[in-house]
Image (cartoon, rainbow, N blue to C red; front, top):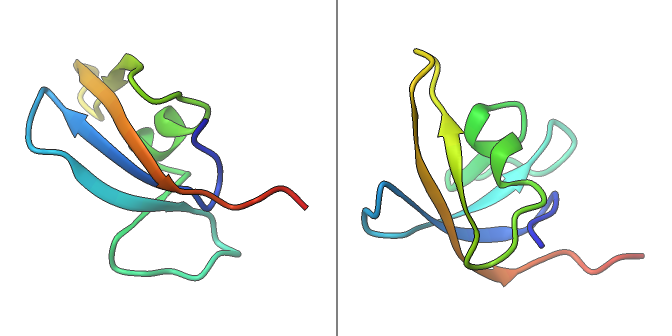
Length: 77
């Protein structure tokens, strides 16, 4: 399951997959990060590998978002 700090690989509309890290303001920002305060970030949270859901765009349209893999995630403390 994708959680805060997870490295996720996802595809939008079946395009080539991208890998990024989910972060919040307290997490180290990197150039390949997705803030959880975005439509994409909040939608990815809680998704499981292979799941496809509608991703809401700012203009109100939706497109298919698939979680392809979770190459790395934070271990629970």
